Image (cartoon, rainbow, N blue to C red; front, top):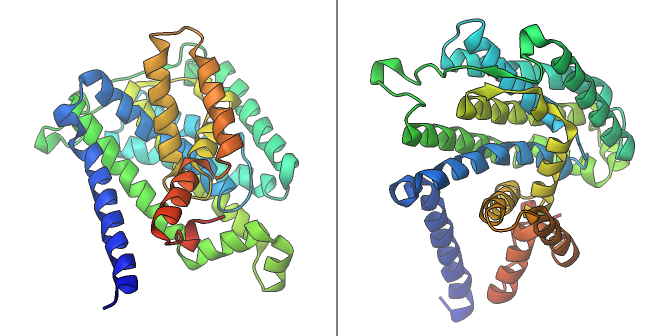
Length: 332
């Protein structure tokens, strides 16, 4: 084996080692992190699912949605209502929240995906506003401004596991989030993912080769709604609370920013962008009351100097350092 053939092998091993080391960080974090930061990291994992739902539409299908908070909120309310009003256990309540969010996305998507560009973005905001005001007015069911408080039932009663234990709650959120990212990775690398990419790049050509553009967009919309619903259900369990305020479109706007900063069209971009901006917020909020100005500045700088996001910038640096191009499935 010559030197040129050994170099890619060595860099691949180094990359695998780096990724493996980084993957161990969230697993081992509770052993070394303070209780406050354990909660922050758990919150980052949850919010990254909302950013990932934005990324699934924007990065892989080319549809910019400002309405993903609707499905996040429906997932949250599904869990809260299931536990507090229907007396369901944790897993049935979480299933109810995800099912409700998925159904809502299926119905809204049937209309929304007929549109593109700014028309699509506008109708997603309209749906979000409509159901936000419905949730605010249906006080008997949703609690209105006050929301719904509840106590989370046991995770596994037979094993004595409960979300009231901070470490148990953290690992529960970590495992669900990991499962979601694995499912997204499988989808975008599947034949359906290739259809997503074809529609994103050129819908006219996609039609010419026999792809049903409407159905492809609708499937992506439903999957993104389910992903946001899982995040909302987890957030409801995390805070033991559900509120219509989380259905407002400005929550979707934050998720769009997280996805763009991290890198749309990449698997881990939403997670990285969410981690950066939420961690920065937690650090700066105790130092400077106008910390949102700094958050805005970071966002502008990333968009200007790293338009492919942080993951895209890291890939470019890695490519220049090793001479190995990034995986084409992660490029835009």
